Amino acid sequence: MWFQITAVFFVLLFWAIFFVAIQSARMKRKQFKLTQRFLQEEDAANSVRKQPLDPELFFTADLKELPPLPEGDPHKVERAANRKMIRFDKPMSNIELKKRYGRLQLEYLAHYEENFNDYLRCLTKWAEALIKEENPADALRILHYAIALGSEFRNTYKFAADIYAEAKDAENLEELLSKVVFHSFRDPATANHIITYVQEKINTLRTN
Image 1 (cartoon, rainbow, N blue to C red):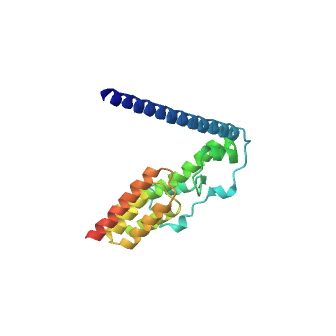
Image 2: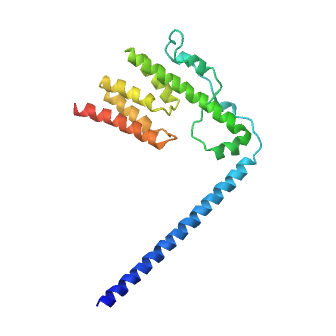
Image 3: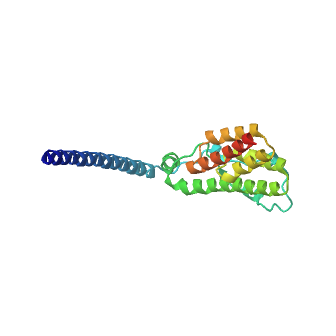
């Protein structure tokens, strides 16, 4: 009896080890293929000659859409707005950018995109200052503008949610949540954080 149990145990153990080994080999082959494909795409992208940047990539800030800048422009909004900026409608990987514009353009693209992000960062800080000055209307005007441009900053959305929650405006909170859900954030953790934050504001309004 014990011999039969032991034999069955070792047979099952053998098949378990065999199954794990097969799965491990498959995963290694799959990972190897993915790595090879990535290296091939990277090599192909690096061989692309420098291409001119599409004019439609560049973003021109329109300060007329915003409230009047405060005296001295303490948040450096105008300075940020006057820099050369690039705005991507959809996130693109470095390989995609190199394939389209060439490796030599990558540094310029990154710099121009960072200028755009800095502009949105300055707008968000300006909105925060207006909230502290108890001017939610102008703050929302700025935040709406930044959100429409695809801001990736958590506070852009959280400040708007705070204003709506303070006004007990569930309808606009729902609309804000929808915008976050359908926006393609580069970092999924950022999207999840904002969604949770806005949803908590909505839940609080519903229970009060």
